[in-house]
Length: 69
Image: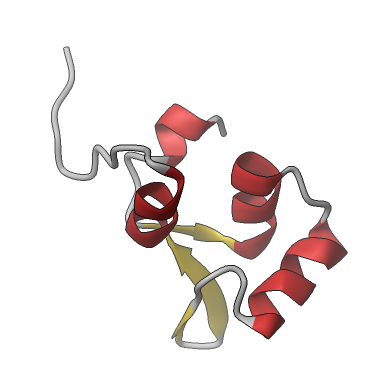
């Protein structure tokens, strides 16, 4: 997955968010999520990262729900 694809999804996994947006490894991403540096939501038993707040914080535009040709 790349940043453009991530911006088209409502949520991504913690390791994906850490790698794509912050250049972090898996353990560092989970630590950042645990400390609140990466915003998370819990869906069932999974911890997911909502893309829109990260995109906004980094000055990127989310493309969730937009159709591209």
